[in-house]
Length: 199
Image (tube, rainbow, N blue to C red; front, side):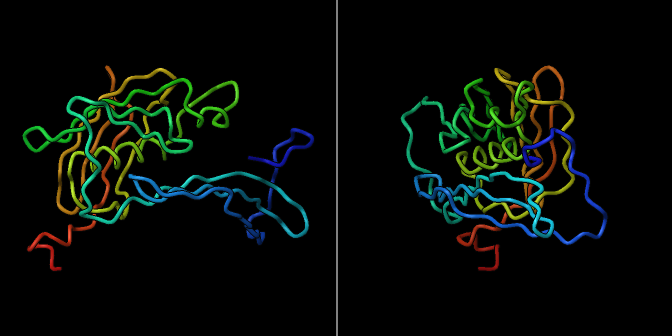
């Protein structure tokens, strides 16, 4: 976000050297993986032009089984700022990944994105898709994104359907309610336990 001050937008010249400094504010590990929060700033020379924070989740090693849930229990991304994103009943049906994404108005991501006009960040949608894929048993850590579109904003209280299809080296996915919301492809690393994966 731009540095607080006059309220005027920060305009920087093309080619200007910027320095980014970040520090770890929180770090912990749980059943999903290692979670960290970083806070930092962007400087142009001696002038601070923006400040912000970033949440990162590094999933458990590929092939590690997800923790067991009671039958019928909803799963949830209850980790740091992703708390409030409910991913219910992720499962594989006839080779398709299916799940429901329920976006709580209490999700902390809405506080800063954006005040007065809350919109779920695109990265949170991707995190929910990857988490659902791992929970449903699709092996391999996410290694990259293919062509991805975010067609409509996801708002507090939205309920979306996730559908994913395994494709060569990844997953083609979409989120929708009555209309498409977002979709694309995610590259997945091969499972080392798969004899055809070369490892």
